[in-house]
Image (tube, rainbow, N blue to C red; front, side, top):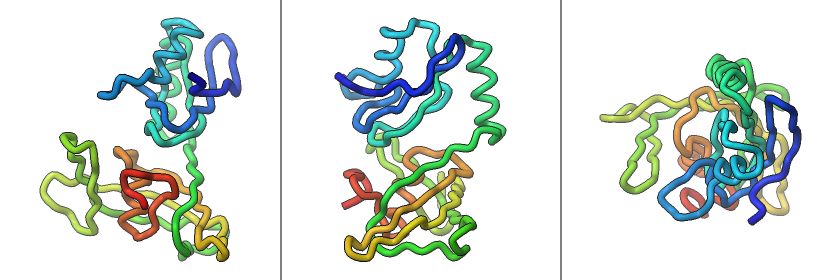
Length: 180
């Protein structure tokens, strides 16, 4: 099973490009997870500094010792490491802030663990938590009626980008859970 590609590797840090379809950590399905495969190849001291959803591909940081793990997880919490996501959505989604700036979208997030699904609302409801995402449209491709989006999470809740853009009426292309 090819689950990732090595991008960078030294005595403290491993940067991998995780492919779509593999969970970062073990889940309810019996598939192998990224961290299990990484530990087999690079050793048991490896720990993920963050996660990506099963259906999300992209760069993931792996600490090779606890000192680096603490430094990187703190840096992520303090927003010293910027996580940027690029993806295509259906339709013409133009950010209000122009080509160079980001537009912020806020909503309310409810996680239904039993259904492994989240729900997004425009106003607060019982058990919801606030979410915020900044995004800008990189390109609109009229012939395909799709938009290339760049987004940064202000909050980082389960399935936030996928669910929030579907709620806006512009689901992420290839997302079977919240998309078309």
